[in-house]
Length: 109
Image (cartoon, rainbow, N blue to C red):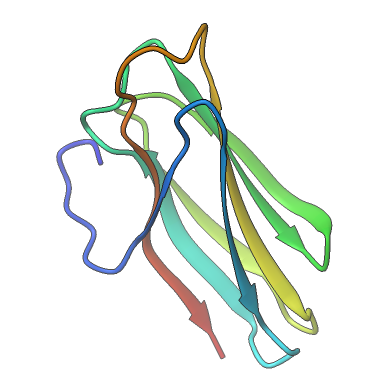
């Protein structure tokens, strides 16, 4: 993402759809942290909206384009489930668009 390599990441394909990843928290964690962005081969005319849902409720939403990264730090204390959703916004479904990335993603106890 933006020329940087992130060792432990969650990458979701968003080509003409939403990428969703879910994790059980079971009230055992305090923070979710990541750096949001898209792979460097992403189409420059496409945006991705990243959403963090906790127990089915939106906790954070960010929209990014190629070359943008943004740190994310979310309080997950007392929550049962973490859902990461990335949705592509483009004019059509033609061509390769890359991946939405939650770089250096971690859930801290």
